[in-house]
Amino acid sequence: MLSMSFLTAFFWYCRRLYSFLAQLLKRWSNYLQRQLIRNLSVLPEVDLLGYSAREWKGETKQAKQMREAYEELFRSFHIRYLRQVRRDNYSVVRAVLFQIFSQGIPFPSWMKERDILKLPEKLLYSQGCNWIQQYSFGPERYTGPNAFGKLRKCMEALKTNWAEISATRDHEERGSMCNTLFSDESKEYKLYEAIKFIMLYEVVEAYEQIKSRDEPVHNLFSLLFARDSSSDPLSFMMNHLNSIGDSICLDQVELFLLGYLLEVKIRVYRLHTFNTEEFQVNYPDEYRREWNEISLLTEDDRYYHIPLFRT
View 1 (spheres, rainbow, N blue to C red):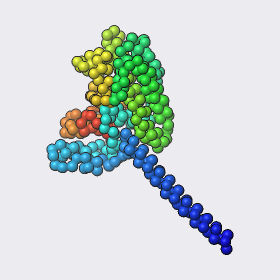
View 2: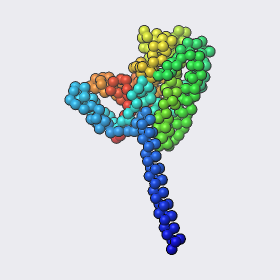
View 3: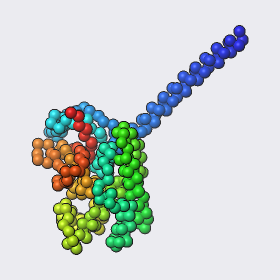
View 4: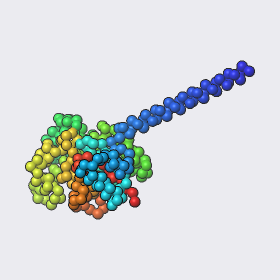
């Protein structure tokens, strides 16, 4: 009888312990999931019209126009959901890179032919651009003699993550890898700074071609150099690139450049221009048929979200 009582008490204790540990594990799992979602810079999908109704309440002229624009996306373009992108000055670069990675889009053709890890070295030594030591890393605002080393680490992060994710064929696994990557600020920022530097490299290359008249360049570079604030690569870096991620985001000309160097057609639905010819714009406006297409939507040309299509 004593042994039976002992066994009964022991099993009761084990059941209580098991129940306690299961509850603890469940709470810990929920906590980790909440932390992951909180850290995500690209949130899970939400219903498009539900988002519109929540964000644009009231009967002001702007609210009505925005709701109509969202309804047009739903009705005419079969956009049913959207993924919200963190509202900071990396917003558009983040939205573009997230889609490139999540869709498994490979390196652009020129990047397959050149080692992007050598671009900082080439710009500094081969082309004599010692002013890249004045390059600033977004909100970090770092400039100085170590800029070259920091740039190389950014390029390594971009190349490694892009190669690894694009080589993953399973869509769900690729999505999980993207969620993990885009919930780590320090890793994210390296990707965006690498993209900014590649933009600078392309501008330097185009500027040298224009000066030497070796071969024609894309007309977007004529637009870029026509601005007083970016008449040459140094002024482009100092007046535009250095502040991206910190106090400003990409403007329209730089969005053309981004699509051109990544070899993707970026289709943007500009909701604040609803009922005009500027409602749907492609960046760049001239693109090759074999380029992949990604889509963005914006309410103000500053912050961008990712539309999701369903038929």
